[in-house]
Image (cartoon, rainbow, N blue to C red; front, top):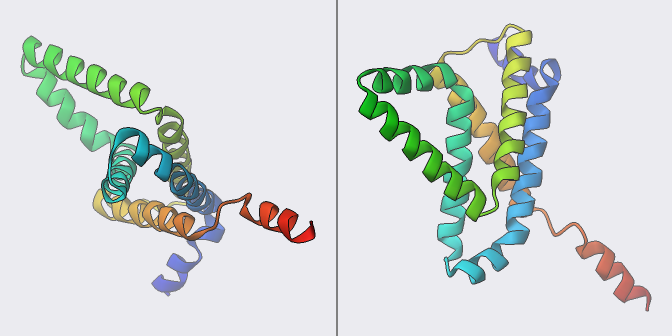
Length: 167
C-alpha cells in the first residue's frame, strides 16, 4: 500500500508534476544555451553541465531544508559580530556576482518558486517526509526533469524542418 501512495503523489500534489515540467523546460533551455555559453566563456560542455546540476542542487537544498540551513547559519552568525559581517559579505558578494554576471537569476528564481510551491503542496496533503528524504525526493524530481529536458529537441527545429520540406 505505501508504494501506491507514493505513485499517487503526482495526482494528489499536482505542483510536484508542475515542478517536474519546470525542470524539463529548464533542462531544454540549458541544452539550447549550452553551445553559446561554452564558446563565450571557454568552458567545456562537461563543466557546463556540472555547474548547472550543482546550481540546481544548491537551489533544491536551500528550498527543501531552509529551517535546518538557516539555523546553522544563524548559529554561526550569532557567535560574533565579525562572523556576522563575514558571512553577510560573503553571501551578498558571491551571490550577487554569480547571479548578475552569469545571467542566471531568472532560472534560479523559477526553479526556487516551483520547488517552494511543490513543498507547500506536499504539506497541504499531509506528506511531511524527514529532511533527508524530502531532499532526495525533490532532487530526483528536479534532476530527472533536467535530464528529460536535455533529451527533447529544440522547440523550433520541427518548424524549420517543416518549412524546408514544403519549399
